Structure formats: structure tokens, C-alpha cells
Length: 361
Ligand SMILES: NC(=O)c1ccc[n+]([C@@H]2O[C@H](COP(=O)([O-])OP(=O)(O)OC[C@H]3O[C@@H](n4cnc5c(N)ncnc54)[C@H](O)[C@@H]3O)[C@@H](O)[C@H]2O)c1
Image 1 (spheres, rainbow, N blue to C red):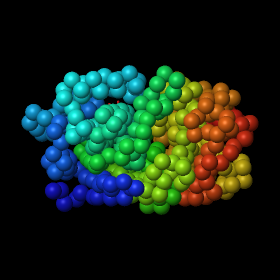
Image 2 (cartoon, rainbow, N blue to C red; image 1 turned 180 degrees about the vertical axis):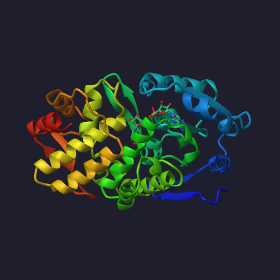
Image 3 (cartoon, rainbow, N blue to C red; image 1 turned 120 degrees about the horizontal axis):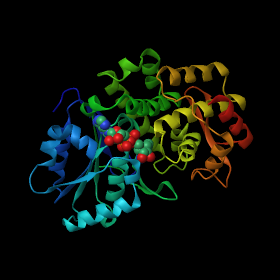
Image 4 (tube, helix red, strand yellow; image 1 turned 60 degrees about the horizontal axis):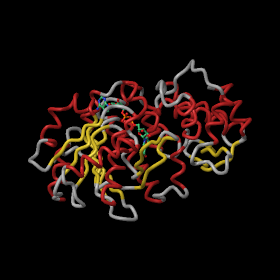
């Protein structure tokens, strides 16, 4: 096995599992499959990743007659309830049983979709996550949240289904476009701002070029895995502290929804959301202005938040009130008391948030 492989152990309330991180480490997954001995393995693979990395993935995909490929078209629209029915039919037609295994190879869309399929198929079979975007390595593959979208909303139908293993192979990142790289940096920086000092230091010392190159990017993935795991272990189902991970997301989700989930990525919306929630923290007298300036300086230095968008504060606040994390129509956000000290589930006045969006974003 690769000597440079990093391991993070998730000690959940159920069986624990390993997150392995390194460059060219798919063999770690092969060993896990061989140890588990599933009767069949369904490899749910994103079509773009299959096109770019077909040769590298061939040993995984073509290993004997018990491996099946389900190719998932690109795009959030395919992370849907309807597409999940297609996956279930595929698995049933091919004789998948309760002793089968799902492997998700792709970004967060593929991981959420395949994880959802595994959580529901025959009341739940195991899933291994093989994230191929930076966002899915630092965030979505860790923590067991899986979901699909329905026309009424995003991530509405889902489950908590911890994976059997996460294999974060940074080899995939060499083909990731810069815009997607930035989406991942946003979530990693979020970890830095809500308490992961070592991730924050990587951002403070580095720049876009250095932080996205090996070995720094591997260190960033490792730091995020350690940090997110430590939070999720304390609160798997988000009844308390796990909510700190939603920093930037109350406003971010509302911005995504305002744009109808097109023309702006999740990462870009969250970067704008972090700016808004930092500003709200200052205006509510919770955060010092110099700390806000440091945090916003990092978001800008790494080019994470888009500019020149036509954002309407009043409309975006309306979308915020429908967020499933809000209580009885009031807006709740994660505010920062200082960099590294988040306060979750904080009520924020609608008028104040509207002004923040109109004046600052
Ligand atoms: N479950 C969770 O806890 C959680 C957390 C955060 C986000 N999410 C979800 O994650 C999703 C976003 O994930 P994402 O940003 O990875 O999006 P994505 O899966 O759509 O991937 C983004 C793009 O990158 C391409 N791609 C993937 N790997 C590549 C590679 N190695 N080289 C080149 N291109 C590659 C994909 O084809 C796609 O076009 C959203 O659906 C969001 O709701 C879930």
C-alpha cells in the first residue's frame, strides 16, 4: 500500500470507518471490497469522470462478473427522486441483494445520489464513497448525509447513511477545473473559519496556486476530514453542534434557490453566504470588524465569491424562510463570535439580513 496514505478514523455511534487520503490509492478500495466479499458491486460513476479517468478506473470497474456500472449523467438535476427509481430498477434487474455493495465515484452529486440509493435499497446496503471533486473530498463524502432533490426543493428526501469507507484519491483532482476547485476551497475555508486552526493556517500562508497543488491539497483534504469527522462524531444527526457546519449556508442556500439552482454553483453561493453572515455578525455586535476583514480578505484572495450579480435582498430573505433548517419562518444562521468561534442557530432579523445582502454582496 502507498506509504504516503493518510488515514482518518470515524468513530460513529455505529460501526466506525476509515477515510483514506492519498495520490493513486484506489488499491485501498480493492482491498476493502475483497475483505467484504459482496455478492455484487454497483459502481455508480459520473459520466465525466468515467470519460476522463476510464483507464485509471478500469481495474475497479472490470474486476470479474460481479461488478456492474451505473453511469450517472452530469448535473444536479440527476440527483433526483425519479433518477433514484432508475437506479433501484437497474439493481433489481441485475440481481442485487442485501449482500451487495454500492461504490460512488464522482463529486458530491454522485455521492449523495448513490449514498441515497444504498441507504434505501432493500432497507439499506453499504456504500463506499470515492469522491473526485475537492468539495466532495473535504465535505460531502464525510458525515453520512445522503439525499436527492424533488421539484419542491433540494436535498428534501434523504437519510443518514454512513459509508463503509471513504477513498479520497487526489489523483482525480488533476483534471478538476479551477471553478470546481474553488467550490471545494470554500468549504475547506469554512472549516478554517469555524474552528479548524490548521486549515486556516494553510489558507493564511498559501495562495490559490500553492494550496491546490500536491502536497498541500492533500493536507487540506486531510485537515478537513479530521475536523468534520470530529464534529459529526459528536452529533451525527445534527441536533446540536453539527449545525456549525452550516456557516454561510442559510444565505447560500437561499441564493441558490433565488437563482433557481442554475448559473451559480453551491460553492459560490456559500462564499457569498459566508460574507453575509460575517457582516451580520458584525452588525449584531457579535464579531469585531478586523476579524470580519481577515475572513473576507481570504474569501476574496482565493476568488471564491462571484461579483456583479443582481441580488435582491428582499427576495433572497423570502427564500431563506423556506429553508428546512429554519424554525417557524424565522431566519437562523451561524454567526461568528471570532474566527474559530461559531455560534449556531442564531436568530437574525429579516430587515438586517435584507440590508446586508443589498449593501455588501
Ligand atoms: N452530503 C453532504 O453532506 C453534502 C455537503 C455539501 C454538498 N453536498 C452536495 O454536493 C453536491 C455538489 O458537489 P460537487 O461540487 O462535487 O458537484 P458535482 O458532483 O456536480 O461535480 C462538479 C462537476 O465536476 C465534475 N467532476 C467531478 N470530478 C471531476 C474530476 N476529477 N475532474 C474533472 N471534472 C470532475 C462533474 O462532472 C461536475 O460537472 C450538491 O448536490 C450538494 O448538495 C452534499
